[in-house]
Length: 245
Image (cartoon, rainbow, N blue to C red; front, side):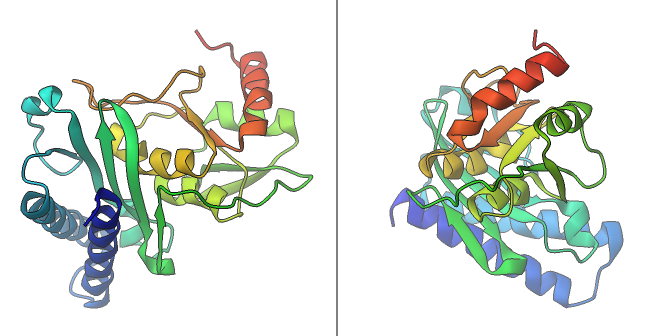
């Protein structure tokens, strides 16, 4: 299998496992979330070890191995993005399987298991933005910067759970801008960024710099994903609302 085929197969299978686990009704609440994290992570780690034994892996649910810093190819995965949404029986959660090569998000598969969809890092059409823009925000903790920019752009707020579900909403035509300043890690956005970039979208830090992966500290606190033509407007409004240092 190619790297993209492998990413898709792993993300899709992990999503099915998570749906089956939730469907057993043997766990609920936080216990369901913890079980989902462990089961999906164990599967993904085994699948990568079997199919790409020479590659490094950075997973949210795995103890970090510093040897990855010397690797050119690093799989960056979030076995269950949106644990709270998954545990609450919602649909807006995802599985992220990304591959960074020399620090660049090159391959990505984002599974939305509850919708039966896997979005891949390959060219695809993205719907045109409507006259009234739609800004994605956290359904529980919308960042002030996102709210300010949305107001400045006259954009409608669209609350969605997980980071992957938000990013994929743009590709699916359900939203136009994903501006995040509330703190993330590399596994939260590597696969979504790879998918967005392959589709021709803009994906960067909120100061316009590139997203760089496989850092010693995987904390990657901010993100902008949107249509390319919207990026200058978002940066302008963001600078006016809160100048980026």
